[in-house]
Image (cartoon, rainbow, N blue to C red; front, side, top):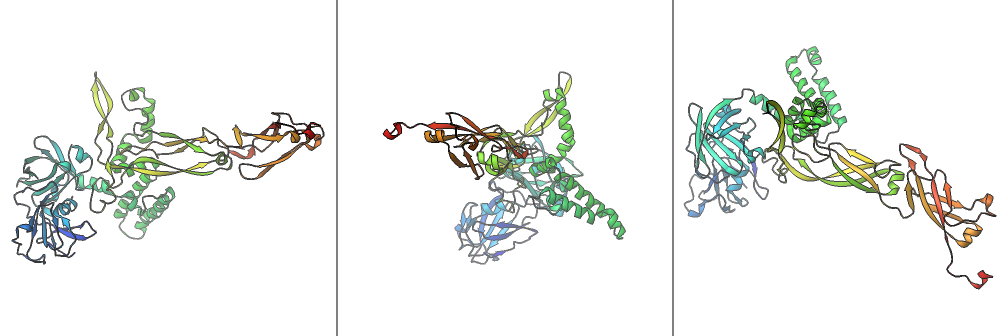
Length: 540
Protein backbone atom coordinates (compact mmCIF):
# COMPACT_ATOMS: atom_id res chain seq x y z
CA UNK A 1 0.00 0.00 0.00
CA UNK A 2 1.30 3.48 -0.88
CA UNK A 3 0.94 5.87 2.05
CA UNK A 4 1.61 9.58 1.75
CA UNK A 5 2.13 12.07 4.54
CA UNK A 6 -0.72 14.26 5.72
CA UNK A 7 -0.64 18.06 5.59
CA UNK A 8 0.90 19.93 8.54
CA UNK A 9 2.61 16.71 9.64
CA UNK A 10 4.42 17.18 12.95
CA UNK A 11 5.14 13.75 14.45
CA UNK A 12 4.78 10.23 13.06
CA UNK A 13 3.87 6.93 14.64
CA UNK A 14 4.03 3.51 13.04
CA UNK A 15 0.80 1.61 12.60
CA UNK A 16 0.14 -1.83 11.14
CA UNK A 17 -3.18 -2.53 9.48
CA UNK A 18 -4.78 -5.95 9.50
CA UNK A 19 -3.20 -8.13 6.88
CA UNK A 20 0.33 -6.92 7.65
CA UNK A 21 0.23 -3.63 5.72
CA UNK A 22 2.33 -0.92 7.35
CA UNK A 23 1.51 2.76 7.24
CA UNK A 24 2.74 6.01 8.77
CA UNK A 25 0.15 8.36 10.13
CA UNK A 26 0.95 11.95 10.92
CA UNK A 27 0.22 13.65 14.24
CA UNK A 28 -0.65 17.30 14.01
CA UNK A 29 -3.48 17.71 11.52
CA UNK A 30 -5.23 20.00 14.01
CA UNK A 31 -3.97 23.48 14.83
CA UNK A 32 -4.73 22.85 18.50
CA UNK A 33 -7.36 25.59 18.85
CA UNK A 34 -10.25 24.03 16.94
CA UNK A 35 -13.55 23.36 18.63
CA UNK A 36 -13.79 19.72 19.82
CA UNK A 37 -16.02 17.54 17.66
CA UNK A 38 -17.83 14.28 18.30
CA UNK A 39 -16.17 10.99 17.42
CA UNK A 40 -16.47 7.31 18.15
CA UNK A 41 -15.06 6.05 21.49
CA UNK A 42 -11.65 5.50 19.88
CA UNK A 43 -11.38 9.06 18.54
CA UNK A 44 -12.36 8.26 14.96
CA UNK A 45 -14.45 10.92 13.19
CA UNK A 46 -14.90 9.52 9.68
CA UNK A 47 -13.33 8.40 6.41
CA UNK A 48 -13.03 10.95 3.63
CA UNK A 49 -12.49 9.67 0.10
CA UNK A 50 -10.74 11.66 -2.63
CA UNK A 51 -11.41 11.62 -6.35
CA UNK A 52 -9.42 9.04 -8.29
CA UNK A 53 -6.77 6.75 -6.87
CA UNK A 54 -4.16 9.37 -5.96
CA UNK A 55 -4.36 10.08 -2.24
CA UNK A 56 -2.54 13.40 -2.75
CA UNK A 57 -5.53 14.77 -4.61
CA UNK A 58 -7.13 17.74 -2.86
CA UNK A 59 -10.43 17.09 -4.60
CA UNK A 60 -12.85 15.19 -2.39
CA UNK A 61 -14.95 12.45 -3.91
CA UNK A 62 -18.50 13.77 -4.23
CA UNK A 63 -19.95 10.27 -4.23
CA UNK A 64 -22.00 9.83 -1.00
CA UNK A 65 -20.30 6.45 -0.55
CA UNK A 66 -16.98 8.29 -0.14
CA UNK A 67 -17.95 9.62 3.30
CA UNK A 68 -17.91 6.43 5.29
CA UNK A 69 -18.39 5.84 8.99
CA UNK A 70 -15.55 4.69 11.20
CA UNK A 71 -16.62 1.04 11.11
CA UNK A 72 -17.08 0.88 7.35
CA UNK A 73 -14.56 -1.27 5.53
CA UNK A 74 -12.39 0.82 3.21
CA UNK A 75 -12.02 -1.22 0.04
CA UNK A 76 -8.84 -1.48 -2.00
CA UNK A 77 -10.47 0.52 -4.82
CA UNK A 78 -10.82 3.61 -2.62
CA UNK A 79 -8.27 6.29 -1.78
CA UNK A 80 -8.48 9.02 0.85
CA UNK A 81 -7.77 9.48 4.54
CA UNK A 82 -9.05 8.78 8.07
CA UNK A 83 -9.88 11.72 10.28
CA UNK A 84 -9.20 11.22 14.01
CA UNK A 85 -9.98 13.57 16.89
CA UNK A 86 -6.36 14.64 17.29
CA UNK A 87 -6.15 15.56 13.61
CA UNK A 88 -4.28 12.48 12.50
CA UNK A 89 -4.77 11.69 8.82
CA UNK A 90 -3.65 8.65 6.84
CA UNK A 91 -3.62 9.10 3.10
CA UNK A 92 -3.74 5.87 1.12
CA UNK A 93 -3.77 5.26 -2.62
CA UNK A 94 -5.87 2.57 -4.24
CA UNK A 95 -4.52 -0.95 -3.97
CA UNK A 96 -4.27 -1.14 -0.19
CA UNK A 97 -5.62 -3.97 1.92
CA UNK A 98 -9.09 -3.43 3.43
CA UNK A 99 -9.23 -1.69 6.82
CA UNK A 100 -11.50 0.51 8.94
CA UNK A 101 -10.79 3.98 10.28
CA UNK A 102 -11.79 2.75 13.73
CA UNK A 103 -8.76 0.44 13.59
CA UNK A 104 -6.51 3.24 12.39
CA UNK A 105 -7.48 5.71 15.12
CA UNK A 106 -7.64 3.20 17.98
CA UNK A 107 -4.21 1.72 17.27
CA UNK A 108 -2.33 4.89 16.37
CA UNK A 109 -3.24 7.10 19.31
CA UNK A 110 0.05 8.97 20.01
CA UNK A 111 -0.02 8.69 23.81
CA UNK A 112 2.57 10.95 25.44
CA UNK A 113 3.44 12.80 22.21
CA UNK A 114 3.28 16.57 22.72
CA UNK A 115 4.57 19.64 20.97
CA UNK A 116 6.69 22.27 22.69
CA UNK A 117 3.69 24.43 23.60
CA UNK A 118 1.99 21.63 25.58
CA UNK A 119 5.07 20.08 27.19
CA UNK A 120 4.24 21.89 30.45
CA UNK A 121 1.21 19.60 30.94
CA UNK A 122 3.42 16.70 31.98
CA UNK A 123 3.27 16.18 35.73
CA UNK A 124 0.21 18.38 36.28
CA UNK A 125 -2.81 17.55 38.45
CA UNK A 126 -6.35 18.74 37.61
CA UNK A 127 -9.72 18.47 39.32
CA UNK A 128 -12.07 16.80 36.85
CA UNK A 129 -15.74 17.86 36.68
CA UNK A 130 -15.67 18.97 40.35
CA UNK A 131 -15.23 15.26 41.13
CA UNK A 132 -11.72 14.01 41.79
CA UNK A 133 -8.16 14.81 40.80
CA UNK A 134 -6.55 13.38 37.67
CA UNK A 135 -2.92 13.52 36.52
CA UNK A 136 -1.15 13.85 33.17
CA UNK A 137 1.97 11.75 33.68
CA UNK A 138 5.13 12.32 31.69
CA UNK A 139 5.06 8.88 30.09
CA UNK A 140 1.72 9.47 28.34
CA UNK A 141 -0.37 7.74 31.01
CA UNK A 142 -3.53 9.46 32.17
CA UNK A 143 -3.98 8.71 35.88
CA UNK A 144 -7.56 8.82 37.18
CA UNK A 145 -9.32 7.03 40.08
CA UNK A 146 -11.27 4.66 37.84
CA UNK A 147 -10.89 0.92 37.36
CA UNK A 148 -9.93 1.14 33.68
CA UNK A 149 -7.21 3.73 34.36
CA UNK A 150 -5.94 1.62 37.25
CA UNK A 151 -5.72 -1.24 34.74
CA UNK A 152 -3.45 0.83 32.48
CA UNK A 153 -6.04 1.65 29.79
CA UNK A 154 -5.92 5.48 29.92
CA UNK A 155 -3.58 7.67 27.84
CA UNK A 156 -3.25 11.28 26.77
CA UNK A 157 -1.62 13.45 24.14
CA UNK A 158 -1.74 17.16 23.34
CA UNK A 159 -1.03 19.73 20.65
CA UNK A 160 -1.08 23.43 21.36
CA UNK A 161 -3.87 24.05 23.82
CA UNK A 162 -5.94 21.00 22.81
CA UNK A 163 -5.75 17.86 24.95
CA UNK A 164 -6.88 14.41 23.78
CA UNK A 165 -7.60 11.79 26.46
CA UNK A 166 -8.29 8.15 25.63
CA UNK A 167 -10.07 7.33 28.90
CA UNK A 168 -10.43 3.53 28.85
CA UNK A 169 -14.04 2.35 28.64
CA UNK A 170 -15.28 5.96 28.70
CA UNK A 171 -13.62 6.62 25.36
CA UNK A 172 -12.18 9.76 23.81
CA UNK A 173 -12.34 13.12 25.64
CA UNK A 174 -11.21 16.30 23.87
CA UNK A 175 -10.63 19.51 25.84
CA UNK A 176 -9.24 22.98 25.14
CA UNK A 177 -7.10 24.78 27.74
CA UNK A 178 -7.87 28.47 28.28
CA UNK A 179 -5.21 31.15 27.86
CA UNK A 180 -4.55 31.34 31.62
CA UNK A 181 -3.72 27.62 31.69
CA UNK A 182 -5.89 27.28 34.79
CA UNK A 183 -8.88 25.43 33.30
CA UNK A 184 -9.95 23.33 30.33
CA UNK A 185 -13.32 22.58 28.77
CA UNK A 186 -14.46 20.13 26.15
CA UNK A 187 -16.63 17.15 25.35
CA UNK A 188 -16.65 13.41 25.56
CA UNK A 189 -16.84 11.52 22.26
CA UNK A 190 -20.64 11.43 22.47
CA UNK A 191 -20.96 15.17 23.09
CA UNK A 192 -21.33 15.18 26.89
CA UNK A 193 -19.53 18.25 28.32
CA UNK A 194 -16.50 17.93 30.58
CA UNK A 195 -14.17 20.36 32.33
CA UNK A 196 -11.16 20.45 34.64
CA UNK A 197 -9.45 23.00 36.89
CA UNK A 198 -5.68 23.19 37.42
CA UNK A 199 -4.52 22.05 40.88
CA UNK A 200 -0.72 21.80 40.88
CA UNK A 201 2.39 20.74 39.00
CA UNK A 202 4.91 18.26 40.33
CA UNK A 203 8.31 19.77 39.58
CA UNK A 204 10.20 16.49 39.70
CA UNK A 205 7.77 14.59 37.52
CA UNK A 206 10.03 14.39 34.49
CA UNK A 207 12.97 13.10 36.50
CA UNK A 208 10.75 10.66 38.40
CA UNK A 209 9.25 9.34 35.21
CA UNK A 210 12.72 8.93 33.75
CA UNK A 211 13.63 6.75 36.71
CA UNK A 212 10.34 4.86 36.50
CA UNK A 213 10.63 4.24 32.76
CA UNK A 214 14.32 3.29 32.61
CA UNK A 215 14.83 -0.34 31.68
CA UNK A 216 17.44 -1.69 34.10
CA UNK A 217 18.10 -4.76 31.95
CA UNK A 218 18.76 -2.54 28.95
CA UNK A 219 20.98 -0.26 31.06
CA UNK A 220 23.20 -3.24 31.94
CA UNK A 221 23.02 -4.64 28.41
CA UNK A 222 21.18 -7.77 29.52
CA UNK A 223 18.36 -9.96 28.25
CA UNK A 224 15.30 -10.36 30.50
CA UNK A 225 16.22 -13.97 31.28
CA UNK A 226 19.75 -13.03 32.40
CA UNK A 227 21.23 -15.24 35.11
CA UNK A 228 22.80 -14.04 38.34
CA UNK A 229 26.21 -14.67 36.80
CA UNK A 230 25.30 -12.59 33.72
CA UNK A 231 24.29 -9.67 35.94
CA UNK A 232 27.52 -9.79 37.95
CA UNK A 233 29.67 -10.00 34.83
CA UNK A 234 27.95 -7.02 33.18
CA UNK A 235 28.14 -4.93 36.35
CA UNK A 236 31.88 -5.55 36.76
CA UNK A 237 32.58 -4.49 33.19
CA UNK A 238 30.39 -1.37 33.21
CA UNK A 239 31.52 -0.26 36.66
CA UNK A 240 35.14 -0.36 35.46
CA UNK A 241 34.29 1.58 32.30
CA UNK A 242 32.40 4.33 34.13
CA UNK A 243 34.28 4.46 37.43
CA UNK A 244 34.90 8.18 38.18
CA UNK A 245 38.56 7.58 39.10
CA UNK A 246 39.30 5.93 35.77
CA UNK A 247 37.49 8.68 33.85
CA UNK A 248 39.24 11.39 35.87
CA UNK A 249 42.66 9.87 35.23
CA UNK A 250 41.96 9.91 31.50
CA UNK A 251 41.41 13.67 31.61
CA UNK A 252 37.67 13.50 30.89
CA UNK A 253 34.96 15.22 32.91
CA UNK A 254 33.90 12.81 35.68
CA UNK A 255 30.45 14.33 36.36
CA UNK A 256 28.59 12.35 33.69
CA UNK A 257 30.54 9.24 34.58
CA UNK A 258 29.57 9.60 38.25
CA UNK A 259 25.88 9.79 37.33
CA UNK A 260 26.16 6.80 35.02
CA UNK A 261 28.12 4.87 37.64
CA UNK A 262 25.37 5.52 40.20
CA UNK A 263 22.70 4.32 37.74
CA UNK A 264 24.68 1.15 37.00
CA UNK A 265 25.22 0.44 40.69
CA UNK A 266 21.54 1.03 41.45
CA UNK A 267 20.50 -1.33 38.63
CA UNK A 268 22.87 -4.01 39.92
CA UNK A 269 21.60 -3.70 43.50
CA UNK A 270 18.02 -4.19 42.29
CA UNK A 271 18.56 -6.95 39.71
CA UNK A 272 21.21 -8.72 41.78
CA UNK A 273 18.79 -9.35 44.65
CA UNK A 274 16.16 -12.03 43.89
CA UNK A 275 13.41 -10.26 45.86
CA UNK A 276 13.86 -6.78 44.40
CA UNK A 277 14.40 -8.24 40.93
CA UNK A 278 11.03 -10.02 40.93
CA UNK A 279 9.39 -6.87 42.33
CA UNK A 280 10.93 -4.82 39.52
CA UNK A 281 9.86 -7.35 36.88
CA UNK A 282 6.26 -7.45 38.12
CA UNK A 283 5.68 -3.92 39.39
CA UNK A 284 8.49 -1.69 38.14
CA UNK A 285 10.47 0.78 40.23
CA UNK A 286 7.32 1.82 42.06
CA UNK A 287 7.08 -1.63 43.68
CA UNK A 288 10.81 -1.65 44.50
CA UNK A 289 10.62 1.77 46.15
CA UNK A 290 7.65 0.74 48.29
CA UNK A 291 9.50 -2.39 49.40
CA UNK A 292 12.62 -0.41 50.33
CA UNK A 293 10.61 2.31 52.09
CA UNK A 294 8.88 -0.36 54.19
CA UNK A 295 12.27 -1.57 55.40
CA UNK A 296 12.78 -4.45 52.96
CA UNK A 297 13.52 -7.82 54.55
CA UNK A 298 14.41 -6.22 57.88
CA UNK A 299 11.04 -4.52 57.92
CA UNK A 300 9.30 -7.83 57.20
CA UNK A 301 11.19 -9.57 60.02
CA UNK A 302 10.49 -6.74 62.45
CA UNK A 303 6.77 -6.81 61.67
CA UNK A 304 6.85 -10.57 62.16
CA UNK A 305 8.06 -10.06 65.74
CA UNK A 306 5.51 -7.34 66.47
CA UNK A 307 2.19 -8.80 67.76
CA UNK A 308 0.41 -5.47 67.27
CA UNK A 309 1.58 -5.29 63.65
CA UNK A 310 0.23 -8.77 63.04
CA UNK A 311 -3.07 -7.84 64.67
CA UNK A 312 -3.56 -4.74 62.52
CA UNK A 313 -2.52 -6.06 59.13
CA UNK A 314 1.25 -5.66 59.08
CA UNK A 315 2.28 -9.20 60.00
CA UNK A 316 5.09 -11.35 58.71
CA UNK A 317 5.48 -11.54 54.95
CA UNK A 318 2.72 -8.98 54.32
CA UNK A 319 4.54 -8.16 51.07
CA UNK A 320 4.85 -11.80 50.07
CA UNK A 321 2.39 -13.98 48.18
CA UNK A 322 1.09 -17.35 49.29
CA UNK A 323 3.06 -20.54 48.77
CA UNK A 324 1.65 -23.21 46.48
CA UNK A 325 2.13 -26.82 47.61
CA UNK A 326 1.34 -30.01 45.74
CA UNK A 327 2.41 -33.64 45.56
CA UNK A 328 4.62 -34.98 42.78
CA UNK A 329 4.61 -38.68 41.93
CA UNK A 330 8.06 -40.15 41.23
CA UNK A 331 9.27 -43.69 40.64
CA UNK A 332 11.34 -45.76 43.05
CA UNK A 333 13.99 -45.88 40.33
CA UNK A 334 14.22 -42.05 40.50
CA UNK A 335 14.69 -42.25 44.26
CA UNK A 336 17.45 -44.87 43.87
CA UNK A 337 19.36 -43.41 40.92
CA UNK A 338 18.63 -39.71 41.32
CA UNK A 339 18.03 -37.46 38.33
CA UNK A 340 15.64 -34.89 36.95
CA UNK A 341 11.87 -35.03 36.71
CA UNK A 342 9.96 -32.39 34.75
CA UNK A 343 6.49 -31.17 35.55
CA UNK A 344 4.34 -28.21 34.49
CA UNK A 345 2.14 -25.86 36.49
CA UNK A 346 -0.18 -23.08 35.35
CA UNK A 347 0.25 -19.83 37.22
CA UNK A 348 -0.64 -16.16 36.93
CA UNK A 349 2.23 -13.92 35.82
CA UNK A 350 2.49 -10.16 35.41
CA UNK A 351 2.96 -9.11 31.78
CA UNK A 352 6.19 -7.15 31.73
CA UNK A 353 5.98 -3.84 29.86
CA UNK A 354 2.23 -4.09 29.18
CA UNK A 355 0.94 -1.39 31.51
CA UNK A 356 0.66 0.89 28.48
CA UNK A 357 -0.45 -0.73 25.22
CA UNK A 358 1.36 0.59 22.15
CA UNK A 359 1.72 -0.52 18.56
CA UNK A 360 5.06 -2.08 19.47
CA UNK A 361 3.83 -4.27 22.32
CA UNK A 362 0.25 -4.87 21.22
CA UNK A 363 0.91 -8.38 19.91
CA UNK A 364 2.96 -9.38 22.96
CA UNK A 365 0.33 -8.02 25.36
CA UNK A 366 -2.75 -9.21 23.46
CA UNK A 367 -3.33 -12.15 25.83
CA UNK A 368 -2.92 -10.06 28.97
CA UNK A 369 -5.90 -9.02 31.05
CA UNK A 370 -6.37 -7.19 34.31
CA UNK A 371 -4.40 -8.17 37.38
CA UNK A 372 -6.04 -8.74 40.77
CA UNK A 373 -6.22 -5.69 43.07
CA UNK A 374 -3.03 -4.65 44.83
CA UNK A 375 -2.71 -4.28 48.59
CA UNK A 376 -1.45 -1.08 50.18
CA UNK A 377 -0.92 -0.11 53.80
CA UNK A 378 -2.69 2.96 55.21
CA UNK A 379 -2.70 4.59 58.65
CA UNK A 380 -6.04 5.09 60.38
CA UNK A 381 -7.06 6.24 63.81
CA UNK A 382 -9.04 3.72 65.85
CA UNK A 383 -10.08 4.32 69.45
CA UNK A 384 -7.47 6.99 69.98
CA UNK A 385 -4.67 4.87 68.46
CA UNK A 386 -3.02 5.19 65.07
CA UNK A 387 -2.96 1.75 63.46
CA UNK A 388 -1.86 0.28 60.16
CA UNK A 389 -4.44 -1.35 57.95
CA UNK A 390 -4.33 -2.86 54.51
CA UNK A 391 -6.73 -2.03 51.72
CA UNK A 392 -7.06 -3.17 48.13
CA UNK A 393 -6.74 -0.83 45.15
CA UNK A 394 -7.04 -1.57 41.42
CA UNK A 395 -3.78 -2.60 39.77
CA UNK A 396 -2.27 -0.71 36.84
CA UNK A 397 -0.47 -3.81 35.60
CA UNK A 398 -1.72 -6.58 33.29
CA UNK A 399 -1.62 -10.32 33.96
CA UNK A 400 -2.10 -13.63 32.17
CA UNK A 401 -2.10 -17.36 32.86
CA UNK A 402 1.11 -19.03 31.75
CA UNK A 403 2.49 -22.58 32.05
CA UNK A 404 5.84 -22.94 33.81
CA UNK A 405 8.06 -26.00 33.52
CA UNK A 406 9.73 -27.06 36.75
CA UNK A 407 12.86 -29.19 36.59
CA UNK A 408 12.83 -31.20 39.81
CA UNK A 409 16.20 -32.58 40.92
CA UNK A 410 15.58 -35.84 42.79
CA UNK A 411 18.62 -36.68 44.89
CA UNK A 412 19.71 -40.25 45.54
CA UNK A 413 18.05 -41.68 48.61
CA UNK A 414 15.24 -39.12 48.89
CA UNK A 415 12.08 -40.58 50.40
CA UNK A 416 8.35 -39.94 50.26
CA UNK A 417 7.61 -36.65 51.99
CA UNK A 418 10.81 -34.92 50.87
CA UNK A 419 10.08 -31.29 49.98
CA UNK A 420 11.67 -29.41 47.10
CA UNK A 421 11.27 -25.62 47.06
CA UNK A 422 11.20 -23.36 44.00
CA UNK A 423 11.63 -19.84 45.43
CA UNK A 424 9.36 -17.07 44.13
CA UNK A 425 7.78 -19.34 41.50
CA UNK A 426 4.19 -19.17 42.76
CA UNK A 427 1.53 -16.90 41.27
CA UNK A 428 2.62 -13.32 40.66
CA UNK A 429 0.85 -10.20 41.81
CA UNK A 430 2.02 -6.63 41.11
CA UNK A 431 4.04 -5.10 43.92
CA UNK A 432 4.38 -8.38 45.79
CA UNK A 433 7.16 -10.95 46.13
CA UNK A 434 5.69 -14.23 44.84
CA UNK A 435 5.45 -17.15 47.23
CA UNK A 436 7.28 -20.42 46.69
CA UNK A 437 6.19 -23.55 44.87
CA UNK A 438 6.78 -26.48 47.22
CA UNK A 439 6.73 -30.00 45.80
CA UNK A 440 6.33 -32.95 48.15
CA UNK A 441 7.62 -36.19 46.65
CA UNK A 442 5.39 -39.25 46.68
CA UNK A 443 6.76 -42.61 45.52
CA UNK A 444 4.75 -44.66 43.06
CA UNK A 445 4.20 -48.32 44.06
CA UNK A 446 6.83 -50.66 42.58
CA UNK A 447 5.93 -54.12 41.24
CA UNK A 448 8.91 -55.83 42.90
CA UNK A 449 10.24 -53.75 45.77
CA UNK A 450 8.78 -52.11 48.87
CA UNK A 451 10.79 -49.39 50.56
CA UNK A 452 11.23 -49.35 54.34
CA UNK A 453 13.45 -46.40 55.22
CA UNK A 454 16.83 -47.13 53.67
CA UNK A 455 16.00 -50.83 53.24
CA UNK A 456 14.26 -52.58 50.37
CA UNK A 457 11.92 -55.53 50.76
CA UNK A 458 11.19 -58.05 48.06
CA UNK A 459 9.36 -61.37 47.84
CA UNK A 460 11.02 -64.38 46.18
CA UNK A 461 8.99 -67.36 45.04
CA UNK A 462 10.56 -70.84 45.29
CA UNK A 463 9.25 -74.17 44.19
CA UNK A 464 8.98 -76.90 46.81
CA UNK A 465 11.95 -78.66 45.24
CA UNK A 466 14.07 -75.50 45.41
CA UNK A 467 13.08 -74.96 49.02
CA UNK A 468 14.14 -78.50 49.90
CA UNK A 469 17.21 -79.03 47.73
CA UNK A 470 18.61 -75.55 47.08
CA UNK A 471 18.29 -72.82 44.44
CA UNK A 472 20.05 -70.14 42.42
CA UNK A 473 18.09 -67.01 41.40
CA UNK A 474 18.91 -63.58 39.96
CA UNK A 475 16.88 -60.42 39.37
CA UNK A 476 17.41 -56.85 38.17
CA UNK A 477 18.00 -54.13 40.72
CA UNK A 478 16.61 -50.56 40.37
CA UNK A 479 19.66 -49.44 38.41
CA UNK A 480 19.59 -52.49 36.12
CA UNK A 481 22.45 -54.52 37.60
CA UNK A 482 21.83 -58.21 38.42
CA UNK A 483 21.49 -59.36 42.01
CA UNK A 484 22.21 -63.05 42.56
CA UNK A 485 20.86 -65.04 45.50
CA UNK A 486 21.34 -68.73 46.19
CA UNK A 487 21.24 -71.36 48.91
CA UNK A 488 24.03 -70.78 51.40
CA UNK A 489 26.75 -73.19 50.16
CA UNK A 490 28.08 -73.72 53.69
CA UNK A 491 24.76 -75.11 54.88
CA UNK A 492 23.33 -76.32 51.57
CA UNK A 493 23.19 -79.94 52.77
CA UNK A 494 20.70 -79.21 55.50
CA UNK A 495 19.44 -75.70 54.64
CA UNK A 496 15.72 -76.08 53.99
CA UNK A 497 13.90 -72.84 53.17
CA UNK A 498 10.73 -72.44 55.20
CA UNK A 499 7.72 -70.32 54.20
CA UNK A 500 8.18 -66.62 55.02
CA UNK A 501 11.82 -67.14 55.94
CA UNK A 502 13.91 -64.00 55.32
CA UNK A 503 17.39 -63.46 53.95
CA UNK A 504 19.27 -60.15 54.38
CA UNK A 505 21.44 -58.93 51.52
CA UNK A 506 23.73 -56.32 53.03
CA UNK A 507 24.35 -53.12 51.07
CA UNK A 508 21.69 -53.96 48.47
CA UNK A 509 19.09 -51.48 49.73
CA UNK A 510 18.51 -47.78 49.01
CA UNK A 511 21.33 -45.22 49.01
CA UNK A 512 21.37 -43.16 52.20
CA UNK A 513 20.29 -39.58 51.39
CA UNK A 514 23.17 -37.11 51.66
CA UNK A 515 25.54 -40.11 52.01
CA UNK A 516 25.27 -41.71 48.55
CA UNK A 517 28.20 -44.09 49.15
CA UNK A 518 26.26 -45.78 51.94
CA UNK A 519 23.40 -48.20 51.30
CA UNK A 520 20.73 -49.89 53.33
CA UNK A 521 19.99 -53.61 53.11
CA UNK A 522 17.67 -55.70 50.99
CA UNK A 523 15.43 -58.16 52.80
CA UNK A 524 14.19 -61.06 50.70
CA UNK A 525 11.21 -62.98 52.03
CA UNK A 526 10.63 -66.44 50.58
CA UNK A 527 7.27 -67.81 49.57
CA UNK A 528 7.02 -71.51 48.79
CA UNK A 529 4.82 -72.42 45.86
CA UNK A 530 3.43 -75.80 46.90
CA UNK A 531 2.15 -78.03 44.09
CA UNK A 532 -1.59 -78.49 43.98
CA UNK A 533 -1.23 -82.21 43.19
CA UNK A 534 1.53 -84.85 43.21
CA UNK A 535 2.27 -87.42 40.54
CA UNK A 536 2.50 -91.11 41.38
CA UNK A 537 6.27 -90.97 41.05
CA UNK A 538 6.43 -88.00 43.41
CA UNK A 539 4.31 -89.79 45.98
CA UNK A 540 6.60 -92.85 45.87
